[in-house]
Structure formats: C-alpha cells, structure tokens
Amino acid sequence: MTPQISPGQRLLLLDAASLYFRAFFGVKDAAPAPDGTPTNAVRGMLDFTATLINRFHPTRLVACWDDDWRPAFRTAAIPSYKAHRLVEGATGNVEEVPDALQVQVPLIRTALEAFGFPVLGSPGFEADDVIGTLTHRHTGVLPVTIVTGDRDLFQLVDDEHDISVAYTARSGVRDAEVIRQADLQARYGVPSGAAYADMSIMRGDTSDGLPGVAGIGDKTAAALIATYGSLAGVREALAAGDPAIKGARRKNLEAASDYLDVAPGVVLVARDAALPDRALTLPRELADPGTLLQFVEAYGISGPVSRLLAALNLS
Image (cartoon, rainbow, N blue to C red; front, top):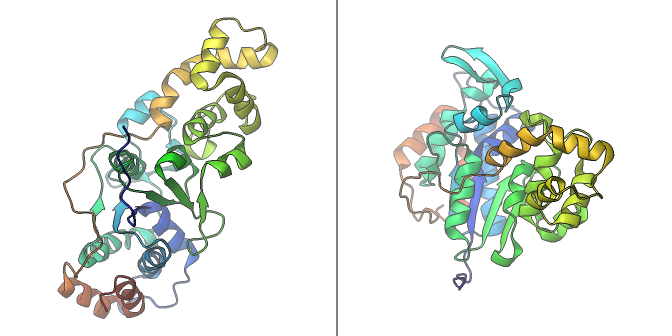
C-alpha cells in the first residue's frame, strides 16, 4: 500500500551547481566585495533560494551538492562521460569552472549552512544522485519539487506521487516551468519520467559525452517506446527478430548493443547514495549568526541575506 502523502508539506531539492552556475552567468557582478572577491554567484544563490521558498512554500529544503561531479562508476562504464569538460588542474584533471566562480563556491556553501540549510553530498556521487536518493526516500510520503536546469532529472517526474521538476533552463528561476507527465508527453512524446530516461538513453547527450544510438533522436526513441513500452521492450523485440525493426534502425541498435548494456547505469540516478542524517526542515533560527554577520560585512551581501531572512520569516 502506498503511504498517505502528508498534506500541506513539500520537500524542495535544489540542484546547487545548476543554480550557482546560473547565478554566476546570469547575475551581473556590480558589487564585488571590498577585497575584490566577486559575489554575483553568492548573491544570486541566496536570492534564488528566497524566490523558491516564496513560490513553493516548502516545509523541507536541501541544497544537493556534487561531491563528485564525474563519478568513477559512470566513467568506468562510459569513459567519455563528461570528458570534454576536463581541464588540467593542480590536483589532476578537474571540471572546467571559471576562476571567478570557483572562489565563490565555498562561500555559497558556508552561507547556506550559516542559515541552517542542509547541504548534502555523498562521496563518489553527483548531486543528481543525492536528489534521486532523497526523492526515493520521500516517495509517497511528501510531495517533492526538484529545482534544476538539467533535463536528466525529468526521469524522476511522477504525478502519482506528486514529484515534479521546476525547470530553470528556459524561463529562469523566478518563472521556472513546473514539469509534470503531461509536459513530458507534449514535448517528447513519452508518458512518464521512466520513459523519458529510456528515451534519453537511446537519444544520447553530447553535453554529457553520451553517444546514444546512431540515427535515433527524440522522436524515433519516443516512437519505439510507444510501440514496445520501454527500452527493455525494444531490446527484447530486437533480439527476437521483430520484423518491424529493420534496415538501418536495426543495424544501428545492434551496433549500439554494448552502449545500451551499460548506459542505464550511467543515465539513471542512484537511489541509494549514502547521506548524513540531517533534519531537512526549514531553519527556525540561524545556525551560525556570527558567520552570517561576518559575510555581510566582508562581502557586502546584506540585500540577499535580508531577502532570504524575510522568506524564512526570520527577519
């Protein structure tokens, strides 16, 4: 039996890196700190958080962190996974991040933690996996809204359990589109988050270094899923010699067999990432007011801090 969803409650999961990259590139840095440190991503992240709280009125909120943006279990399966984003750094190959953003990332985390927000990552896992794990734990218990600019997380959309994605890539954070199953059907021709994942595996994703199946894009993948129900159903029909899968399509699917064997383990988010035991409720008081005051004085971010305090009813 599905547990009864708690009324009047909502878990808001922030894809932190997606949001702070958006803040960095979208917020003009008109007011760097007195020492010259850029603050646009810090300001933007705090303002984004306030905006999202005011819009979605969550009772619980987590900033989900990339402890490992390119996990070994994914690169072992598909070595090209995110390989194009690597640059040589002091500690080996690292993700390419602008210096002016890199210096702000630890400041963002410290500021969020000073407010009392849980900032959760898991060694060897991406933020997507933290989101997948927390969504899995709360399925049927709390409605969940995932805030991201990454389409990969559409795989978690589930109307039955009130799991949606607030998608920021098109309309920004303030007007983020709330993606539900009807939107997946309208845009991609797939009926569910699980079907979207199957489609994305076949389609591939050049931005993540996933080759997909040659000649198969969104429409063809969606048509195959509509006919056979799932990627597994497509592969079963292919193996059984279904005459409807023929010509170049059959040849390309057969040629991609090795990729299709391992791609689900790369594309599907984890649901079992180890996470610290933290209360997820919104802060009822500041966790570290001294550090927050130091931030306001050192970085001149009183405006965003005040707006987030107001959103939390702590001002």
